[in-house]
Length: 110
Ligand SMILES: [Zn+2]
Image (tube, rainbow, N blue to C red):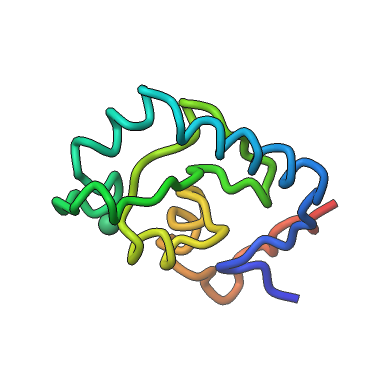
């Protein structure tokens, strides 16, 4: 099995449900409205009408992220769709060169 580009994980459904409820509450706060009012996507930096910005979890809920101010950013729909359940670390790992023939194999994931 290759793990390149994807790390297997199993979402904790109870966690995801609880954090989705918290996200709903967070969207009603003055803090979130101020984030959206800037009208700028966190990822691509484009100016977007505030009504088209979505709440993205930097560490996705499905991967243990929480609905806290430190983990949510406004982003455009295109960036949100492209990101899915990925994290910034996934992008860094994908940017690394593939192992050269003869490189020592990575230790197995436990
Ligand atoms: Zn964007």
